[in-house]
Amino acid sequence: MSDALLPADTAGTGRPASEHAAFAKAAGGYYTPVVALFTAVLIISNICATKGVQFFADHSVKLGPIDILPITTDGAWFLFPLAYIIGDVLSEVYGFKAARRAIYFGFGILLLMVGCFWIARQLPALDPGYQSSFDAVLGTTPQLVLAGLCGYFVGEMLNSAALVAIKERTKEKHLWARLIGSTVVGEFGDTLIFCSIAATAIGIDSWGTFVNYVVVGFVWKTLAEVIVLPITYRVIAFLKKHEPSYEPLPVPALAS
Image (cartoon, rainbow, N blue to C red; front, side, top):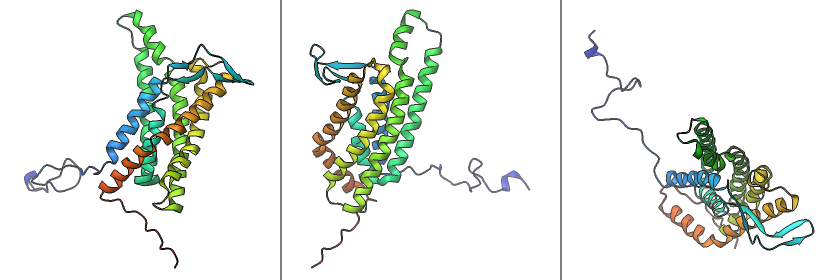
């Protein structure tokens, strides 16, 4: 039999050829851009975190062994809360399974990032004078990425699981309670793990400064969630309204 008489095949897929070009159907809705923003925040924050930051450096206030002032943190202090806010949006609108998929995706991208940075640092430099500057920014990145990976993975999983668990009980009511409650759980796990691993990479070398780093990070991230709660409410409301597949669970009628 001539090849011309054989059933046409679409690029070896085993499916009959069509008169039109074939394309896979992309997922609709806002899930993809939200995940893209979530991943971008993770990448940028892990690079910014390589810089140690200290506010009120000319003041010294102690409470026992704990340093109150100066305030010690890292260059990503303004970005980390955004990752949790986006994580809350994913969990609230798309559920734990979809949020977990985004967390896995971000985890893989961070691994790719640290691998690429390591390769770039090993390549011969065109101008050796710039190598030390390049290493100064990205040389500590593996330790910080390890801290970010561990803290982010545990924290985001706790945050998402807590939010969904609370939502199972409250349905569409008390959004503020599950947003804040899940943040407290997730941020505590994230901050403790991240700070424990990352502290030496940004120059923290005493217990007092370390405790300050943990407390400031946890309090700031939790407060940031509360401060932007009105914006989070509006984003969640917008997505629930415009996602065709969103189906809120019915709230049982009150007994008469």
